[in-house]
Length: 280
Ligand SMILES: C[S@@+](CC[C@H](N)C(=O)[O-])C[C@H]1O[C@@H](n2cnc3c(N)ncnc32)[C@H](O)[C@@H]1O
Image 1 (cartoon, rainbow, N blue to C red):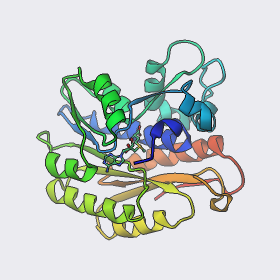
Image 2: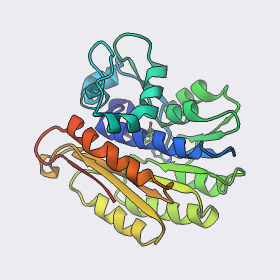
Image 3: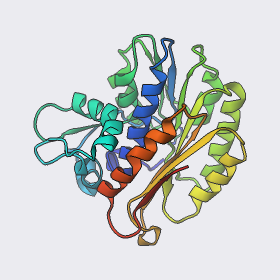
């Protein structure tokens, strides 16, 4: 396990992932019934933008750094898109004091801050050091369950959730060559146990064909599906040119919301020719 999210936190892919996650949580919280979020690859939860890891790549400057100025003031998108970003902005605001942005909320923090007292959050992280950090951060919250096992095991062990409503985030580092198949197996196992759950799979766009392979596997499940993708530059330019999310069993009207957000977000985070986004 070489991947450490601290080097990449708050980049363009994180902004897309967390802005969409925040919208999903808005939908889940509409009903007066508890829900559960299972974050199968949780990471650290919170990231310092002044940490050596962040300083080494400076990826955050082309991500969250495009949405706030150097003094920490919001640089708004056009109004309808900005309204769609508001729940994520709220969480970013909550973890930062006045002044320049210093902290970036990962998926556990977004979920924890948007949950209500009755909701539950399962956080799983396999990396031993990151698990310790995560446990220190969230172990006191009685709504949080922490585990340190393989993501596939979590889905098998924790689904269906007692609440019978919820969201499962599958956000692997894609270090292994068979990661698309592993995600496919995880989804099949998960859906067998919790067919009505909202399953969210993050994927990178790097030109290696993983996005298409994953798409084929996921479409073959033949379930209600929404795909959102944002490329900040052409795939030929190399590196992480973009990212996307497959959302199985998406909430009603999420597609319309993301169609309002994506063009403006893509324009703001664009790094060169070939920047484009789609929702389908
Ligand atoms: C992309 S990061 C997660 C970021 C986090 N979901 C967020 O959005 O803030 C992926 C995480 O998965 C962890 N990981 C890698 N392999 C795993 C496995 N088999 N099971 C669970 N976690 C794993 C890594 O240590 C890393 O922290």
